[in-house]
Structure formats: C-alpha cells, structure tokens
Amino acid sequence: MDEGFVSSTLGTKEYWDDAYHEELQNFHEIGDEGEIWFGPESVEKMVDSILDHYPIPTDSTESPSILEIGCGNGMLLFAAHEAGYNPGKMHGIDYSENAISLAKSVASKKETRDATLIKFTKHDFLTEDIPRDDTTSGGWDLILDKGTFDAISLGKKDESGHAPHQLYPQRLSALMKPGGRFLITSCNFTEDELKSVFLKPEAGLVYHSRIQHPTFTFGGQSGSIVVTLAFEKPQ
Image (cartoon, rainbow, N blue to C red; front, side, top):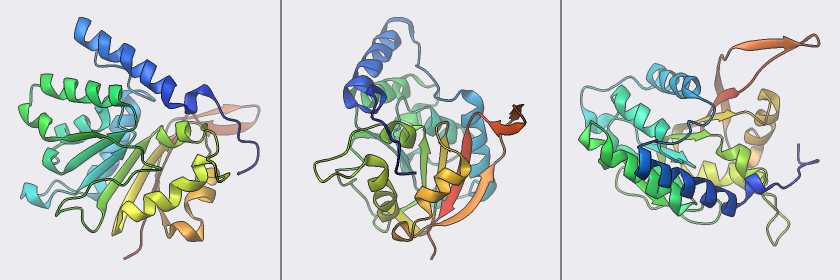
C-alpha cells in the first residue's frame, strides 16, 4: 500500500483552510452548517455502531471519552451528542482554524445549549500533542475518523521521507486507552487496505468489526462506496 501514493491539493492545509473559510462565511450569511462528508447515512451508521458497543449510561459521567480526528464542522460529534452521549467528554480536533471556528459557531446555534460543552481545538494530529484531562490521561475510549485518513494520505512526505499515512497508526495508538476502539470511515481505501495499515505490529491494534454499507456490483465485482471498520487496542 505504500507504493503509488500521489500527493494532491486535497492533502494540503491550504485547501481545507479555503474550503472551511467558505463554509464559515456561508454559515454566518445563510445558516448553512456545511457539508456532511460521505453524507448523513455514514454519520448515522457510525453513531449506531457506537450505540451498539457503548450503550448510553444512566450516569453521564460514565459516558465514553470520544476524540474525533479531523472534526471539520463537528457534525459527527453533534450526532453522538444528540444520541445521548455526554458532550463534556467529547473533543474534536482539526488542523484548520476555520474548521474549528465553524464547529464552534454551529455548536452555539444548536437547540441543545450544552452542545457548546463539546471541546473543539486546533491541533495537527500528526505533529502536535493533544491536551488531556483527568478523564483522558490514560487515553480515549473511542477515537473517530470520517474521511480524515483519506485526506491525510494525500499529503506530501515530511523532511524525513515519511508519508503521512505511515505516521498515522502509531500516533493513533498512543492516544487510545487500553481496551479503547478506533472507528474509521473511508472512501479511498478497501477493507483489506485499511487492515494493512492499522494492523501493522507497531500500531498494536487488533481488528474488531465492520459496518455494513449498501453494496453495488460492476463488472462482476461487488463493493461499497465507503468502508467503515473498528479496531481495538488490547488491554
């Protein structure tokens, strides 16, 4: 999988800064919350999967700690909050300041006022440490990625010659609590390709499950537009 990667403008910070600058303007002008990457159905399926594996606790302090890598406009975290999870234990990060500004602006207009308790901060996942508190000192219970790994994989190699997708698994694992899970949705990679990345020994993860998406058949081959897999960090 390491062969054949070609960098693209979709893998640059400038591209996403510009995209979210436009979405932020649209939100302030007409109230448009922005694009839902991969569509609403992908969000629903990810939240349904979270509900299956992390039932809503009666005590909100027992709600899982959730980190989203590349949160964009925050729609996935807002959906998790609306499903019943504690917003005070959610954190969305993005390396675009405009994305974070948009997510915070959308949160401030949500009917459920405590949506503003969701933390949104500007951080580059690959190069910066993510601040932790008492509940996440040992890592997060659940880490989400919806399209971010796809975009990261289109970035250029760093000065040491490492491609972004090569750095991702170990950075991810360091943020996961033992027993924690990683849920990823991708449109650029097949199930086998994602497994080849995240099941490398240095990542220290094991395969957990997959979410079934609608399939199509073309040229005798069956597939789906997106793939969603869950990986776990053993206790």
